[in-house]
Image (tube, rainbow, N blue to C red; front, side):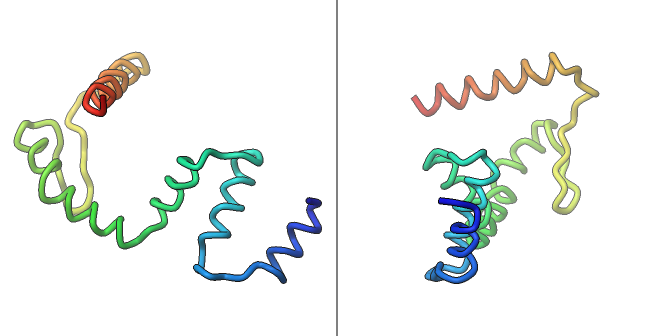
Length: 109
């Protein structure tokens, strides 16, 4: 499809069965160089699903944030959550993120 063909589709032919779904897919594909996995597209949809965002805001306030606060890992000031740690080097950040990723993968397995 040419640029003009896609432009014409967006402007004149695309039916909006859901206000943003077709636009999110096309915009995401453009942003990602023309290709994205179904999982990447699903992640974009989730990021724009206001109902799910509100649900997870409520869940965060009820469980993981208070637990981490009790352990002194984070502080919550209104809607702002702050990690209680000294300034980290790039290497320290990478190591901590790797530990988090490994624990998440172990849990999933």
